[in-house]
Image 1 (cartoon, helix red, strand yellow):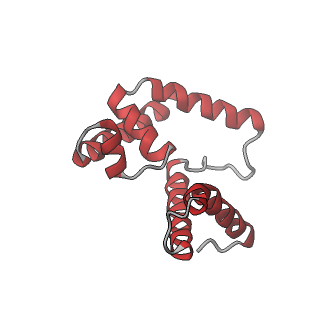
Image 2: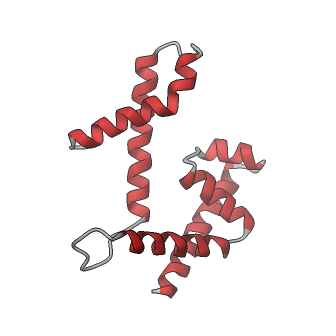
Length: 133
């Protein structure tokens, strides 16, 4: 799924870290299947994040420490400009990696509203960040 042994090891460690409590409490009937699903979800989450943070054109080396913090600060400042509902949906869906259904449940809104707020929020974030460049 990853094409890299190192990424594979990271995924397995992340799967155990995300599910240790449920496994320890015996809530899972089939731990193997549960861990496989957690790994698949983690791969999907990483791919979503990779699409959200495109590489800059002409960039051949990774950003330095200062660059990554500046980008993070810029993203956080842009997030502050979003309306509260859009910001909440974007944080829960993409930062906390909750499903649309779980995000809707946490916020007390419909799944359709989650989709709408996510779409508008991401579009507005892109516009804000593009204006700053």
